[in-house]
Image (cartoon, rainbow, N blue to C red; front, side, top):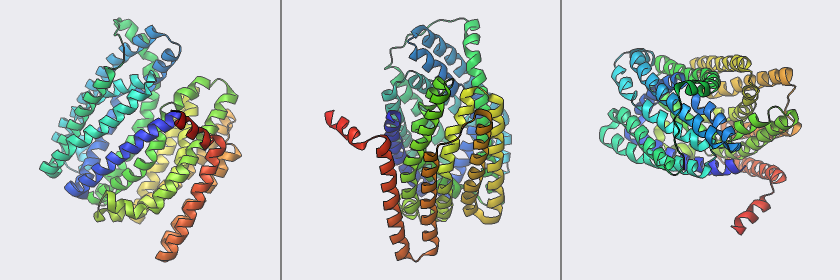
Length: 481
């Protein structure tokens, strides 16, 4: 809960920055510009996922374990080996982007005219890898304060440097803005690294190999999963671009940004320490099952309030944060919201298999889940357009969650407690009832019903939160400070 509160606040701030950026970008470069930005970034993320080898996430586990055991030498040795891996992955990313830039351009835009854009964007791999390495060190050594501050200042700097570029160059400023933002974020991360008393250590290449091997092995498993996720995003964007329009890509990206931005604070905040904690108790069956259920309950309680507010204020948010031009994404956002509680549960239990070290099972499950999502998205977009994408997300995550729970029950005899299912049912029913009132009731009655549902839902989840963590105790702690 401590990590959630700290990084939840950071994410709220970053959401604010992101929405300001989104509003400005929507006005300055329009849906086509946002579509171009989305396609370029999805292509870059695909290459980044492949070439990063997943070492940022996997190294956190090793650095955190060494830090928790107060083994400073181990921490320094691990980070030194990790730094060498960072430079390798950065160069790997640059080369891969340059080599595959014609293919990326052809696949995303149906032409090779964006090849040069992808080549220029390869510069971001150096800045991204170096700043990512610093964030990994901060996270692994539990420097939550500096990590939070780095995220906040990174968001501010990214906004400050990008908006003038969009203002003066319009859609032609998309590529320069991405590059300059990556460089600015690196400078911010470098500043916060200087605050840690961390002495470098000289190690041989043989030691580097020995220390790096487990990091890379775990990272590769994560990489393959991330490749799937990035590939799904890129393939879907390309499919929409080819079968629909570039504006549809922009509408989908903008809608996704609103949904992911609001709920991202929950996922990002919890992922800061959930996986290391789970890995630390994974050999104690009673403890890890208790931890997973507690994590699921907490995420559903927070999402229960956040999502009902998001669903009922979607039209207002689009008008305020973007522009009337993006109102066509309203139905997509509202239907996509239904998928988020299920996504939360899939996210929570997905770490169990990874923490257990069963990489083959983890990859199998993720391959099946991502193919289900991609297949449903393409099918429903073909028949129902943007609204179909929202419906398909809900259906695909429903299937994925049932599939995951079935596997975990068979393999590890794990199942959620009745408390988790109660929270899920209440959250889902409240969202469905709100959605029905929006689409089938007249305006006045719709607003009245929505207000009642929001009030009841928020009251229920606040009550459930208070049962687990008394709000009075939190208030008293703040008063003492």
